Image (cartoon, rainbow, N blue to C red; front, side):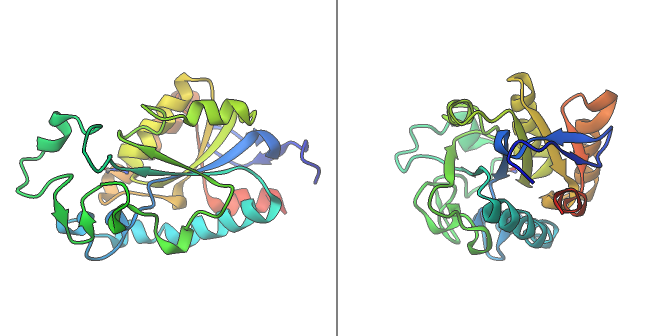
Length: 225
Ligand code: C5J
């Protein structure tokens, strides 16, 4: 397989075709506070096992991307330690007694540099893989992701991570509006809520792929054999 080979992945609503040199694996917010028992996500009453089942399929995809030297980008949702990039509306949303910026089970909640904000060890970024720190749900808002992708000639994205209906969906929609094609492998994205997982994926591939394509990591790996 040469870098310019076109790879065709079985997907919905139809096959997703990409060239390795212009397609990045974009892994959204696989952070300890969302995925680990004892983190912020669990503190809010969520069942983290709904997200943890995405770790193994992400690991498999990531190891193939790394082995082939293709583009890998990670994101983390979080804020500056001085909270200067935390909108007051986001801070008070939910009326929780403990909110973003406060001391949580793994350090200050969603604050850059804190243990809970970091990426889980299973998918920890390697040297050369960009890590985008984003203050919003979408990975393009208030970040240099678009510039990084343009500078590297990336036009297509395989988007994985958590959560399906929040940061994954928001990022796919932002990417779509900026002219990127997005493929979402269903087993590599997760939601605390099974019904949102199902609908979050349906919304992406509906109406002829209004926001992108949906497939499964097995189908991507099969296409790469
Ligand atoms: C949330 C995210 N759910 N990464 N963040 O607040 O989806």
